[in-house]
Length: 228
Image 1: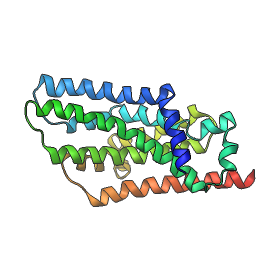
Image 2: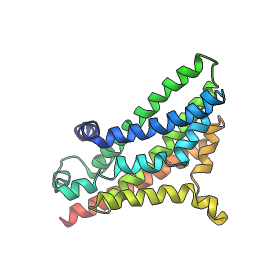
Image 3: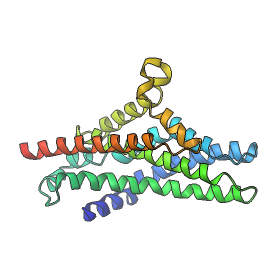
Image 4: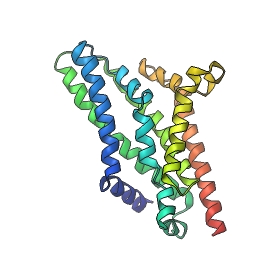
């Protein structure tokens, strides 16, 4: 499992995809930071996390990060190595999930740079900043788990990416457009973290969804292995 995690992380760092994901995050974060913090003088970073999460940041970052995870293996034929690996199928899926989660932490660490800039002028609300980071991480983790699931049901990375974009759009914007779908929103629970609240029920919900997507992915992969 450790070997697979290292392989996946190496793929991220030795391909343009990883750098594009980080670049998207830093571009959006920097633009909103400049507009909100530099122009208006606010020390509130929560609106920036909301903008990245809701207005296209994660909708592009996560599909790019996960679309090749399994679909790319099938397309190139290297999925045979996974199928014959001594690592359990759950271990394979978890390794791909953990490597993507580790990678998404990198741009989050970069946000400490912006926090440091604000501290030069006025110390921001540290607890709210930390809960916002936690919420962003949990939301990203859930999206990553679904992205890997999407990548497992097709051998086309493009289709996997489109499915992930559609899912993120659905749980972000459809509940805003159609009130009857408000219960399917993942953005509304995420807002609790931006207000400085660690909602245990919401935290459990994000983790449960991620586990559910991982288990479904494992079942799909296991069935494919048994057929082969």
